[in-house]
Image: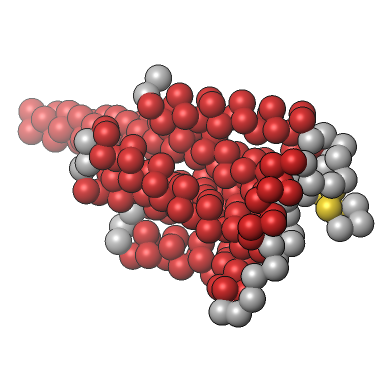
Amino acid sequence: MGLLGLIAVLAALVVVVVGVVYAGHGGPGAVDVWVQTRVDGVGAPWLHVARATDFLGEPVGAVLLVGGAVAGCLLLRRPRAAVLLVVGVGLSVGATRAVKPLAGRTIHDGNLAYPSGHTAFLTAFALVAALLAASRLRLGTAAGTSLVLGAALVAGGTMGWAQVALGSHYPTDTLGGLCTALALVPAAARLVDRTADRTAGRMAGRRAERAARRTADTRQSEYR
């Protein structure tokens, strides 16, 4: 198991532990209160920054962001990267939706809050982008891992700050969203790579078989 795999396991444990601790709660915990007193209630211009960041996690913003990135990957002839973007982001956001009713934590008149889907989305997007950049630049294990983790923390931290500043989530909700992406995107990357490699291997094998048949047919025709 690589370093990212170990981090993914630890992140999954964080999601479970925090979810159990705050299961069924309808209010902030001690950690949430401490963070909220330092983040909540921001004014202009930071309020506009928070709203713009939040928009990226809304359906329209997410479609524009992912759609633009996928289009770029296809233009660069990187179909595997395009698939990973869709799978990694979709898996992370889908997981938060599945966990929310299980955790049962609420905010603002019963709205399910844990884990934050917005935070999981932007973290997953940044993770995939960083993984692709590390591969493209052929970075070593240490440099590549640093880039991936740095991108995840910056993206997740920024969206988490926006969600808390706007009062949409408790801070621990955003931690759960960030860790959800950290837990799932590495697994999604491995799944996409293995599937693509197997597909490429099968296609290569079929091409080799067709070439062998054509060669055999050519030889037979020459002997006639």
